[in-house]
Length: 403
Ligand code: CTP
Image (cartoon, rainbow, N blue to C red; front, side, top):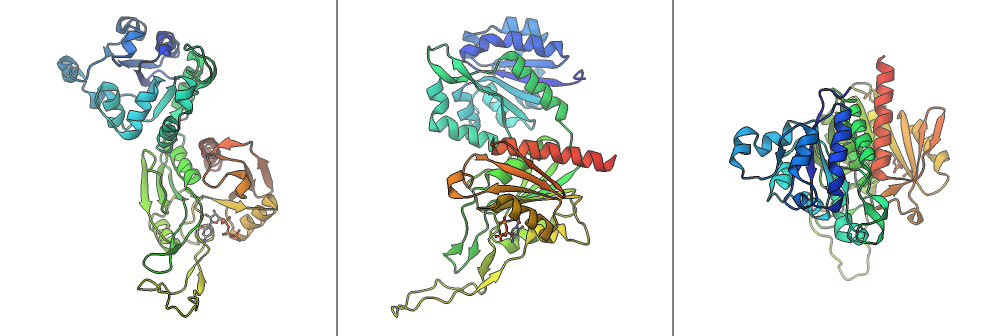
């Protein structure tokens, strides 16, 4: 099944690097071709000779090796595989990748690649939990990098906690899963809306909400991972665009609707944005001033267009599958079920956004999947896991309706 599949394995300098010859051997048992890049620090833990013996391939080490550059330059090396896997991934390589540094073969390859990237982090528990590492992990995930582990357990340094590299067989299973699902949505097009909208009151003030865009961006990344061509129409967020996703940045609900309509036709629309329901009817040209009289400005509100409803009810170019979200603070399933019927989308993902749940702005979500006559409660998952699960469900659905 994996006969023509090749991965590029970047081994960085953690103690877990000693497990990589075993991992390569297991990957080769599956007929997956493996080419290795070894950093200078990784060579302290594992030898190029051992890796070339198990992979049957030359091991690449130095960015400025003229032989390698004439044989296979770093650009070609980064693109001639189906998947790039970094294992063990140290805090250092993750920080470099998150910042886009490129000062050795491993980091340069990660910056130059156009292929999906997986990382198996391995480090001391304090390093893993450090805010800098966690921010880098979030940045990488938001760009579509898939993390394998880390596991919890005893560490080489004598401490206990999260930071142990996933076991070789778990890495092989994750790689196989990724190679097997690659392309499930190839040839399909999707629009994903994400983030809040900003509705201007005057040149300096706006109406907005607390949406971070994390869930919508994660969905765009998950669909792209399955080979879908994704346009992400996003309101203002702190997030970067996931790899392989076309980002259209907008401010207001009306801009969002225009951008979505411009990108039709698509097979899939997922409306995850927290669109502001109202805007100020007439935006002031100049900054509104307090005139000292104590009189409040008269802000007349107008209702914004409903993007989800307009895509769901379109008579021309209606996407084959329209998925909405329902942000509720009470009677979650009841309100979401009514919302799905009212807006006429196919599926709705209901979540409780009460402040106590930490959903708005957080990294986790507890959702209910609602379709006509169907309701599934999903367990509490990270937003990336919710996104992956939804993307696979979309792929299964489109396969079913086309067969
Ligand atoms: N939505 C939209 N355009 C709007 C409002 C909402 O596309 N103007 C979409 C959201 O992206 C989401 C779904 O509609 O997919 C439901 O959004 P939500 O905020 O939960 O509900 P509202 O429609 O705003 O209704 P209410 O505020 O009454 O709960």
